Image 1 (cartoon, rainbow, N blue to C red):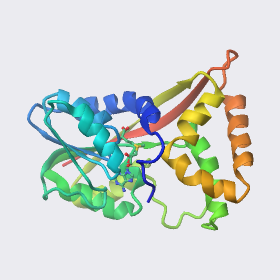
Image 2 (image 1 turned 120 degrees about the vertical axis):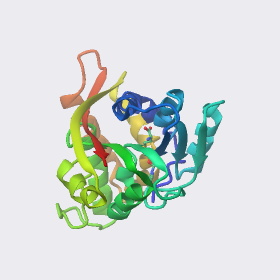
Image 3 (image 1 turned 60 degrees about the horizontal axis):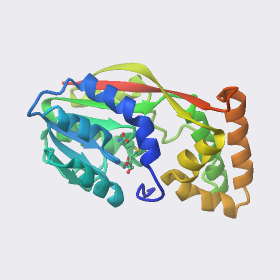
Length: 259
Ligand SMILES: C[S@@+](CC[C@H](N)C(=O)[O-])C[C@H]1O[C@@H](n2cnc3c(N)ncnc32)[C@H](O)[C@@H]1O
């Protein structure tokens, strides 16, 4: 599992803030509800939910990010705990609302994660999560992930074995349905803006926890320069304004499961 304490996640967290806002708005949180922010990162969702008067538990596996949340939480009703989507340290049925902004999607065992999300959510509770749809930022990440897979010989083919499409409402409904949830979902847009491709590369890729974890592998295999060139070419071709500014579009699914 990648350690998200590495490098700097903070600039990406700022990019994801509008999606966190949409997720929290969609959850229609009432004061006093117990809200769990799963994979809370630097606390984008947890802080917004606490400001609405919720009792919030932020679950985050990365130690450094837990410290960041703790530092910014101030006097809010916000508890920070260590945990993962597959192992949430909370009692059965204790969450009125379980939110996960681009985080449950990183669970190495997605089916165990779904079971765990359902276990922790109250009998009349709701789960809302976001997941990237193909295209845009997902295409860039695909270049990196594809190269790492080739290098580590984990297969670069399009095999779907073991794949779990968090962005597919059908997949989510098939796995949450047996736990009594009904699913609704809508696609949303999110654009990341940086002053240049170089800025995007240094602040959103090279220093991102996923970049910090994978660059040494690509470098050792002599693939890093090629990957960098492909990323820059794609950004130049598709997402660079005449001014040099980069506007990287992304689409994601906002899914809500209620029971
Ligand atoms: C893209 S970040 C999103 C963070 C935050 N939700 C936000 O809106 O900025 C992904 C987060 O998922 C966490 N994560 C990674 N693996 C996880 C797992 N198995 N279960 C729960 N969270 C996980 C990471 O530590 C990281 O904080």
